[in-house]
Image (cartoon, rainbow over all chains, first blue to last red; front, side, top):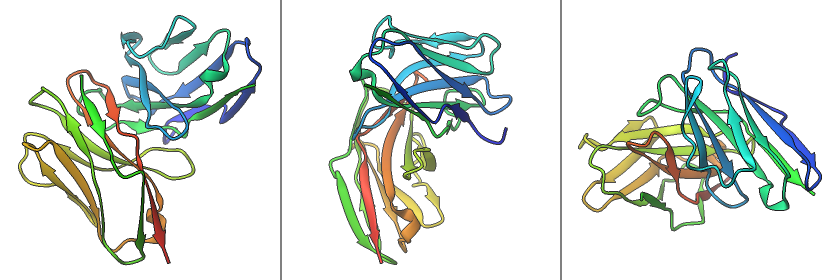
Length: 114
Length: 113
């Protein structure tokens, strides 16, 4: 596609449930990032993929969060046993190589845990 | 660790006027990049302008320019001839050796007709 696509756009789930958020990056971009943006805050880094591997997962808050990118393209962010504090906008970005190249963002998934 | 500070939670400017958004950062790295992103209500972060730290010349993109003061670790954004479509959240971001962006808390800019 022309840009980074994230699905769903909005997700409401009950506390304790499992959710998956999908990111479809720009074709050919090897670097993919996940960020979390809480209300009134700037995005906070979660994880960075270079190709299929997670090059940096230091931003994942705990072991309930996990992300994969099995074929080096689409990525899925998985959250187990969701908590109300997980409510936020989850942003995905991709870039041709990572590093100093421009990151292109998707429109995010707004997750609401009730 | 790197930090980015935006001390202006909200700013307002009249259409066609000029406004400056402030950003300071802290880092021990010598090679890095600084960015200003715009986030409209659609939530998509859009790159406005970027500055390489090794360049002394301030970056300019049409109506947008920066004042990069490396010694002071300051990186302000000037928007000239403000337009209604400039209304959005603006985030300053730092990109260094770790390949991830560190964002400030943002400034909500309202352009008044």
